[in-house]
Image 1 (cartoon, rainbow, N blue to C red):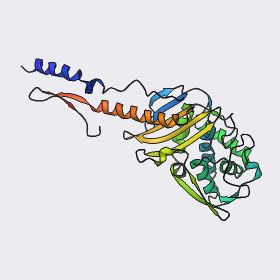
Image 2 (cartoon, rainbow, N blue to C red):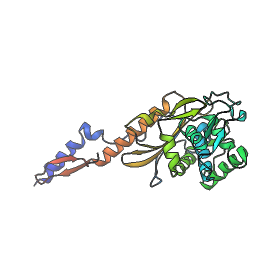
Image 3 (tube, rainbow, N blue to C red):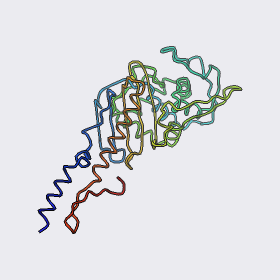
Length: 294
């Protein structure tokens, strides 16, 4: 009879380093204060850390600004001029777009999403019917409609530290924003050159992962304030699944990018582990088999 040797062989296989290390750790060792990893298609939460904590979200705000601007179906080619009121007097943040510069609404939208340009986002909000106050009102209403019950917006740029949300709410925002083709395209573009007066100015993406061929990113937005830390949300395809990643309050300069890499590695380990299986051949030999996707 072959079952006794087969069982012994199976136990031997299970004791090998390859198999012992196949199971992933309980969760990725992310350093961000709050994090959430969600399967976008099923809504399954794959990992969470302080996902219900209410935190400042900085320029992640600009995703909602973009949504309400697009919902309003405004002319994308309409010229919008940067006004003095678009200058950041709260934080004193730098902008390369001078007061008086005129760009199209679509150019401002892309600069807001891709380069996290504060004056671009401010001018966009001002161009909303009824102005900035009406835009913020629309943003808060949209948040309620999306079930983001813990979220509050006070401006369209994210410069206010009172723009608050949770990782759970932001996953809903990312899913909603991903349904807009322009948000997908503009937030993941690596660069944009616009004409400001007689000058051609090139802007880059604030998320350096968009430059990597190893990442299949469908949506991206970064954020930073002193009280918010460094933030990052993405919709990505990993292990052949659409995944939403939310990272809040990362203090190191590269922590949010490293956390994203840790999440990627963890998901790949989990996928590889689930793809492995033990089988007994007709000759009684035990083999570790892997699916073609592992």
